[in-house]
Image (tube, rainbow, N blue to C red; front, top):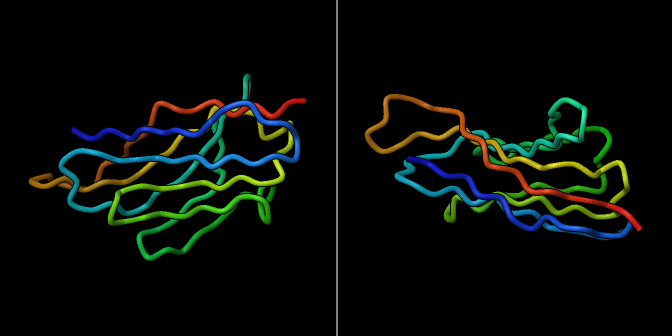
Length: 121
């Protein structure tokens, strides 16, 4: 089985920074697409940033220039460095990954449990 575990969320003042981590564990042969999504209360889950296995990245317009996605393929871990945080960044942040398991029959989509980020003074 596969687990995605996010960490690094918390309460931060506007203008502050946080670094989220997403660690994948299990009998993982390969990880392809990885992405960070967020969901604020009463709103849909939206893409924040994503990365393919070659390192190509994309960002939502609202976070460009403030957030940076990165991954350590050797550790099966993805990061999201969030700078100059704003109250509107408050949400539960989820990681998502497409994973191929050893002995698996194909690539499957997996979600983490989410980590709360609150930006408030």
